[in-house]
Image (tube, rainbow, N blue to C red; front, side):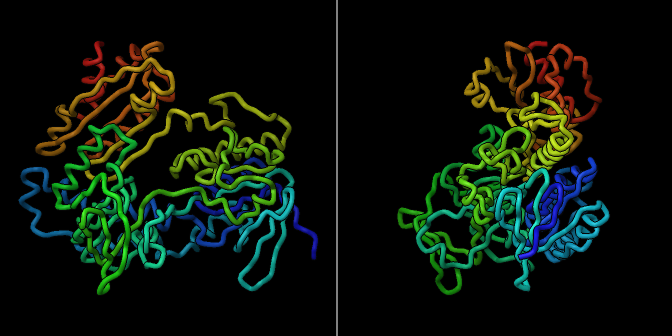
Length: 472
């Protein structure tokens, strides 16, 4: 067997997270190879964030027009489903990654297409379609950026059926007449609304509630909206079995009840895609990989890193890219001898925001936008926390749409008088989120935040109302 090729950093997985790691280390003067068995650009570009939001956006725009007198009278039709699908496809470049491949080359990164396996210390073997293999040895780091994979529940009969995961749902070429969605999390709820607005009869079956990681006042607004649009939501409902009858999926949901649909979307969560890459031979439990704040995998000799979903921290693309930038900088600093095993919180090498300042958006209509901790989470973390909440009812919201319905909450650390969490729910509240993220990350004291005057008339005036209700 030929000697392995030497390279500074090997990155397994060329999704958005892997691209950011590789790009960052190359910018710092190191060499890097990206290994990818699928499309360069990864899940977010082709089967998750981008196509799902492209499916949602036309319905949101149409609903917004219908929410304003004078505009609603001009809306005489419904969504053109084929145009929506075509626009979605344009965002995926029709699942062609040539432009991403060009970016990799322009950034000075080597691209290796094939299946990667860690075959020794700092060594990765790449298997190609033609049966050949290429070996690389990393001078400084091997980085797992392999994302996550769907978690499929052990429901009787499910494994034998041709159900959809989010991949099939976001890349579908036709709109089904009916769709059953297993799971009440973000992806399931978003796609349920997207397809309902394209004309599909949708039923959501959730073992507990929907959007359970968010305050009930916020998730309740979404639940009301979905039901108001004719989506059937079955909460606290377990699916005992699934079968096919006359070409349709039939779900047994207990008490003699069934749900029947042309398509079945299983959206019951995801788990890190870490099996099959040789980690077991390193003595690591692939179910328990959790990178430290600099991206390093503990107990792996100091040369193995994991970022994004594979790192077992936060399953959000933007947070994974944040980790990737910091990890790339940490690898380069260690290569230069300027960084040891640990780094201080909030340094250029630590993903400190992962712990208590994560921004996230549910892109339903209405949206939920949240950063940091809920009241319960803060108190479980030992924070002496209070909450202030109110409906979003300001001049800006009344101008936005007739009958605007929204809700806002801030969670305050009473000992330090800073925000540790903020949640907004309502149409287009995602654009409020970055201001809240800055306040939480920057630990802006409330008495200073009082001087951040919101422009009138905007929905951001809700900040003033929250602070007033708090007592400022």
